[in-house]
Image 1 (cartoon, rainbow, N blue to C red):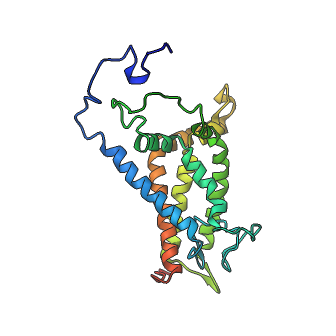
Image 2 (cartoon, rainbow, N blue to C red):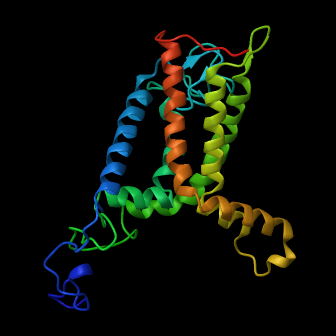
Image 3 (cartoon, one colour):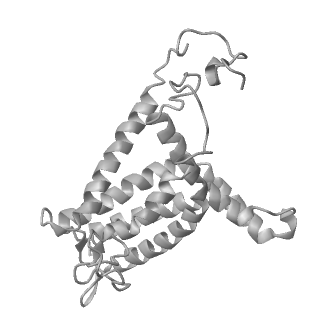
Length: 263
């Protein structure tokens, strides 16, 4: 770029406009709402992750702590405690994987780039930054590991599926409680979000020259492509559902409420 040449919206081929935008609609509502909701979730999840308490109320284990691999309360470790000497909250051992998956997600990147960094805050609205390097430098270059986080997210989803199944279990038989139904709704939304991921679409149908020679993968690719159309919706719904599932377990474990049973 030549010296003195302005980048981005100030470039020589762009229209000379003094106004930041000519839009007259409430374009700021989407990034503002995203900022408030996302920031609220981050604050709540951070508090719960570091709390290290009230995460298990048999048979419910908070999805923030699953699998519980550290010094966990009795009955909450279905896969053992290989990190028994871990000095911090057990949630910090596993949360890095679902959190990494969401933070590097293509949709979430768009959402927090716009709402937190204003890059740009909306279409046809000038961003305040003087330069743009994309995802070629730290820390944003780390977003390129998204596909590997997707594999980890699948493992986490399988474990949460197991947690959902045993949420119907109790000593001497089974039961259906409000927590069981919340867990079912949560795992369905988590699977929809995970399978609708762009990386999943590439995994099942990428690097193929002829779909006609791979009918099974083509059907899988078609199915994931249909889910992918609603990826943003599943991203938000699963964010709410995992927080609600954790909150319900917290309220039970802390004694604030009692289980509502249907059977």
